Image 1 (cartoon, one colour):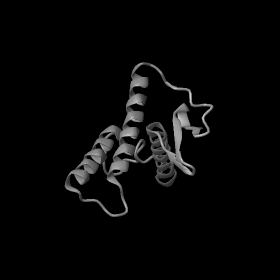
Image 2 (cartoon, helix red, strand yellow):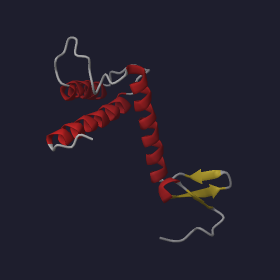
Image 3 (cartoon, helix red, strand yellow):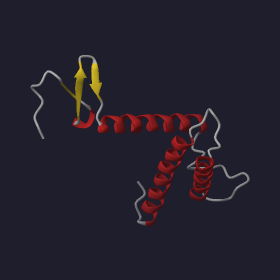
Length: 122
């Protein structure tokens, strides 16, 4: 990779990836910069929803449904996939963001299950 560190049109982006100034005041945002921003946004969205709703997705209260949290996440994921497929979503929701969030929560729950089955309780 070319060393641009002495170039006045170079600025360091996140994760060490380069962002370049196309014109003074106009920056090219690298793919890694964009990925980092999206991941940060999703992280903040999940944390905000967790504060708002508690651990409802990972530790449901099970008043009506007795399904475990993984099965309930599958249902929510199916619902979001159906909304995406049928293009039926409310204006104030983003089913793709919701889907990403549910997939992350599913990953967390699956890791918890695997850790317990392997005797890791941390």
